[in-house]
Amino acid sequence: MPRGKPSKGKCSYCGSEIAKSGATKRLSACPKRQAIIEEAERRKAKSETLHHLRVQDAWHSEFWLDLEARGSGTLKDLDHYLRRIWLECCGHMSRFSVGGWRGHEIPKKRRISEVFERGVELTHIYDFGTSSETLIKAVGEREGPPTTTRPIALMARNLMPEPNCIDCEQPAVWLCMECLTEEEQWGVLCSEHAQAHPHDNYGEPIRLVNSPRLGMCGYEGPGEPPY
Ligand SMILES: [Zn+2]
Ligand SMILES: [Zn+2]
Ligand SMILES: [Zn+2]
Ligand SMILES: [Zn+2]
Image (cartoon, rainbow, N blue to C red; front, top):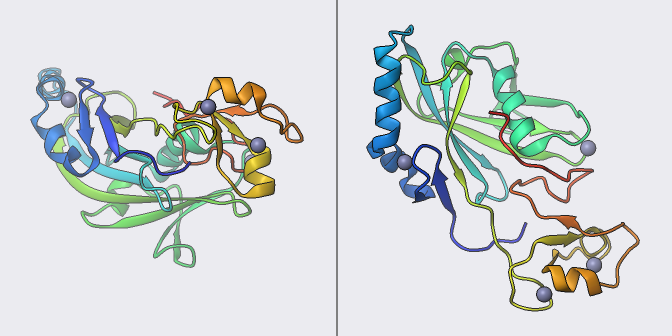
């Protein structure tokens, strides 16, 4: 998707808007998140290391996620999460590595705590044909009981980019695959101009969704978190 406004995101706990660069600070200061952490401590669930992971698309960094992953979870859990929130189109293969594309592969059965020491960055590749490349960096960790029963908690996510229609200045909600494939242009359109748009060789325009994979292979969304 074309670059839109600066990379704003939203805190999953209180819903407030946060800048990508200030997300870590804002999350640790968030009173709603603090309340959820204290509640988990009162339940006396088992403590473990919880890893703060900053996830972003390697080429379109306006797509980003801040996750809290349990140390006892595995890379398979993370792969599953990335597929569901951003990537899955037709069940392609994926892999994690250190050192980029040609780097050393890390098996998916490895535990989060074995892999993500602070500062470590992994590359996740989904689909070795039309590939999506995602960077995952360990930016912090804390000890405590997890706040959910799931292996991963979504703490913050970028807001949906809002590109302008190529025919007017209105916010676009549709993408023409013919513009993209034949003319290598991001044919993003408002509803009015989507109707009048002359291209139909690749079917109707598809709805813009909050995922860096939109327009690649058969991906059409929905771009929603699995939990
Ligand atoms: Zn918050
Ligand atoms: Zn596909
Ligand atoms: Zn328009
Ligand atoms: Zn078009």
